[in-house]
Length: 433
Image (cartoon, rainbow, N blue to C red; front, side):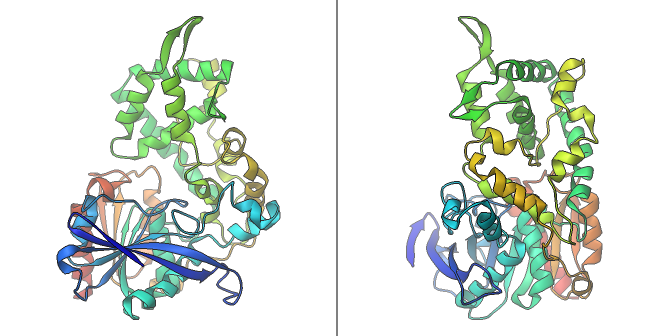
């Protein structure tokens, strides 16, 4: 273990060895990284633990600088573990450079089948007694981290003191088709709100998409396409995302030797915003997090988008309507345009075709839940359907919701201490009943 300090904090790095396949505990192992964070003034105290599960899938735990955001509130009473879920951050990596060590696409897909919420929770249950001495801990799950928390309630509630979920209540039984069928209308509303705020962006977006369709430029080996440009709509699900998208669009063109052309600055910004080099598991596993019930996910976002022709870039450019952005969806073309994903296209196709995903959530056990649970549900959340979230909230015994329009999906980051305070108050009121 390696300990060091930031202002007001003591941080200790932990590495844990866990089975790749928890069904084969004597088989191959992988490494999981976690960073313990405690207030300097309380470093020697016996504090309860709070486990933070990041959103995603495919993102390591946020790297904080001191007591920013919700972390400052948490360390007032908890010893916090920021966990890099398997395959992310400093845990054994899974991506273009490492997956070929597994073999070909079939071996890679079989390996990645162990990177869903069920395996993540079993990792946590192996790690917990090593840190807490066997005591249960509080889990804070953001977005996909909330999906993992609901799996935790289904599979190992004995390990939980309480559960706090922010923007991460999954449908218990929806197929990926249902998820995206609900998502596209939400995305369309977010785009309409953006264009109402910044009407000048309607013409700008059309001009950028038309240029990309004609010229198909590249930046750093990344092919820039109209569909890739549309995917910048993922920004619209965060608190300041609409403003950031507007600032990106307003600087798109420069006057070059042959007339107006996309600036190098814009092309690089688009490449950075749409690349999966830093989080390839997001692209590989995004639809797999919804896989259960014996049906393949089958590139659900791509298939369902055909039901919403207003999102077709070519159709929009052929007419006079606005170009609609997308976001929070993965498509086969991602594995053609992005050099970080290109070698993994066949692997992704095998995951999309997989039919033997185990069921993630135990509705009967959740209906009998005794763990105090509170969830922030963001009104018209672009990433997680509010209707699905509230349906799940009513299916988990004792769960208390805070439905708010004050924040977007990143509320636990934007709202920080206030969001955590509100959820802690809700679970404590419930636990005292």
